[in-house]
Length: 152
Image (tube, rainbow, N blue to C red; front, side, top):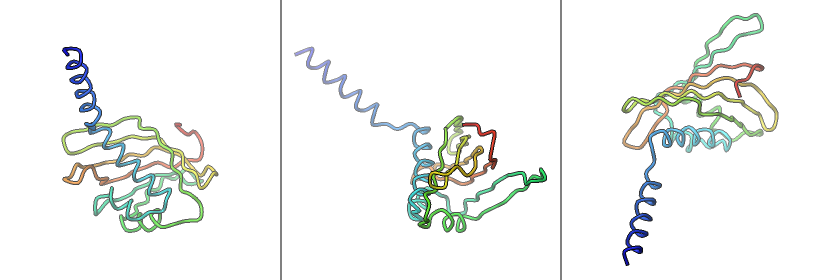
């Protein structure tokens, strides 16, 4: 009987621990949901993880080496990647660094981007997220763009 109690208690604790999601796991899930929405071209799924006024900023060097900054609004982001498209937008990332300070999180994630099966570009994403009553929401995305010297 004592063994049965210990076994049941151990099972209960294990189930409870596995059921609890860490903040880092929830943040990864939010970003992975965004990437899934890109692959599917699903604007509703994409909106579910974005804050209302999210901005997307890219930094890239042109052919002459001049650095350019490009900013995209939330609506333009949803229109460009949250609409069905012929080729799958397949962004593959590695979560390399997640910093959390209460309701604010910062994530660094190197990536490679493919249009269908064709490599397009690479770089590093920098996500800013905030914790809301509905979970973690992306409030800003900054990323670099390159075609070689990929980090992953």
